[in-house]
Length: 259
Length: 280
Image (cartoon, rainbow over all chains, first blue to last red; front, top):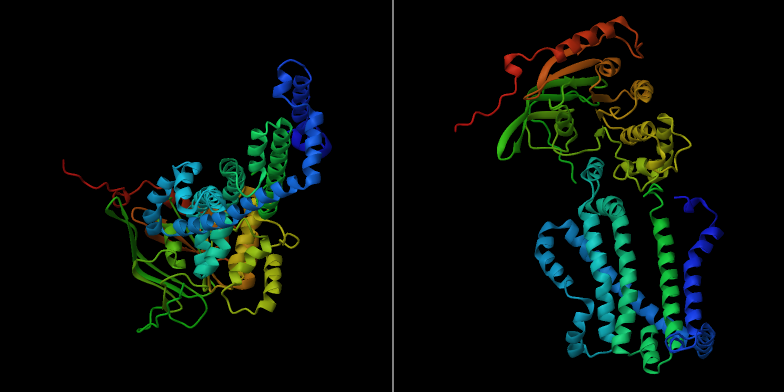
């Protein structure tokens, strides 16, 4: 890859090219007159809406609400997913017992749980959090399971040679060997919780958040506010993902660069 | 994993209290393949003296690696006896070390962490471990690479690191399963010399499986020639030359020709692969 060797500033400039062109096209549509000016809010009013949202504190409130739902889902749902992935990866009987159930449940789309949850615990914060947790659970569990179940015998034998206890075997062989897969699962889980958090906010519209603002903006026909919220959603999602990639890079620093 | 220690009731052939005397008697091993028992090792009798270097050569499939896996305790379930200093081999033990053909270093640990993990379950005091690890890294000429990850080492360096990891516990018996098989010819010659130097310094018992007859003769006090189907000892060759050895020695060359002739000779009736007779 030649892009990898070019200086960072050049890479950033290249990456910004497409979004800037897209915004320019948008602005052209907005200022073209005729019916299109109704469908495309000019960037000036989008900027004004951004300032308005920042000054009222609504933007920070929404971002924090959505981010904390995502993070809650990642920690609780992802944590349970990793634990269950390890357990089923290590124990064949447990895998046989729970595997079919889990793979069946996985086929139900996330939002498919909303009616059931709505009747059980109401269409509020509780249901949102359950869905967000569920969105993190499956990628975390499936990848962890694959990582733990496929640890190479040749490395496990080294543990036997040096008389490792089960705990040493887990901490020094199984966990680090499965770590690339666990982190892959968490990276997916992170994206899914972000999607699930905003999705449930749009559908249920309770408790504040970027999705709630999107929903309200549609009802008020605030095209500028919709665009600001979408941009903020994209930028935060992108930034969190980059942060996570850096963490992954650090944790897997033992891997050759080509991987 | 607990280490089973069963005291011997009757004294065996060589049950001296010495370090690293291995006796194998009447040992057989078979695997079930597709429901059929297949004998891989038959009637293995061998006594290895403490401090001796024994090389094992033989065609592929003659059970050389299985023999080492049995001695190190990664496989049990065999008939006959394998005893180290009189104790029957049941499972793995820190008394018996092994170097595999692939280095098997943990990719997520640095060189020094990889070597130190061998000391995890020894009674070496924690305060002394770093020093012992450093000594063994120096022993295999890898000083300066302590913080390197395995993927940053060359094949020869990684294999030397694996040798250091196997030696750091000071096993009574070190098994080497084609440890240099994956190295290029030049690196191989270099690590062979290094292995000889290490063995002369440590004087622990070593058994090395190899495909390379020259390597077997260069390092071994004795060379065991094995025959396949089922794996058994065909011949034991004494290499009566002091260490360190000269590769150009006429004796080594004469023995090499002899062993190669033996290994490549047309199989006698008894050595032919016997296919199970099926009635149709």
